[in-house]
Amino acid sequence: MAAQRHRAARGRHHAHVESGVRPVTARLRADAGSILLAILVIASIATAVTLYAANRPSEGTGTAAQERAVAAATEGTVALLSYAPDTLDRDFAAAEQHLTGDFLDYYSQFTEQVVAPAAREKSVRTSATVVRAAVAELRQDQAVVLVFINQSTTSAEKPDPALAASSVRVTLDRVADTWRIAAFDPV
Image: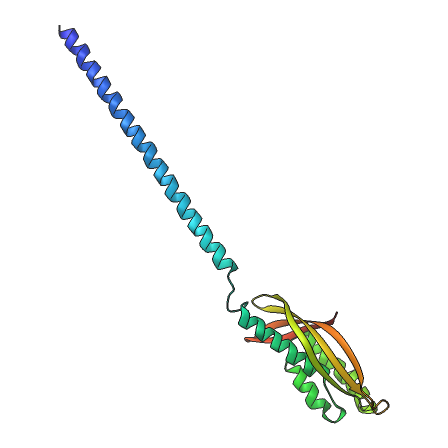
């Protein structure tokens, strides 16, 4: 009889342990599923926020920055390509205010050694107008603007204006919060 009670007690104990194990295991599986779901939701939100922050227009690349880049390219292009024999020094100095880096050095040397002597000797006068300009590339510290130009040139030998239409790829660098021309390449 004692053996029967012992077997009955042991059977109840095993049944109790088995029935207790199953609910705990099921609860752990449910908790693990909830935790995994929460981790996936948090990871998805973090990814979405990161992608938004990386791809949203910033102050340096938004519409206002595009407008400033186009204005700088337009004003600089007109200054670079417009000069008169009686105001050469002032015209070149004004143009240099729109330039930076190696291009500034190149422009200064080229105008001094080539353009100024020819313009004075032949009384060359040029006037440029920008017909259209648009941003081709824009980054925080650099922009590329495509500029379409009409230019009129007269000289003592040819007083009738020679008209030319051209396009230029103007690369701008941001210097002290101002766009400056770093390269000027005919297209």
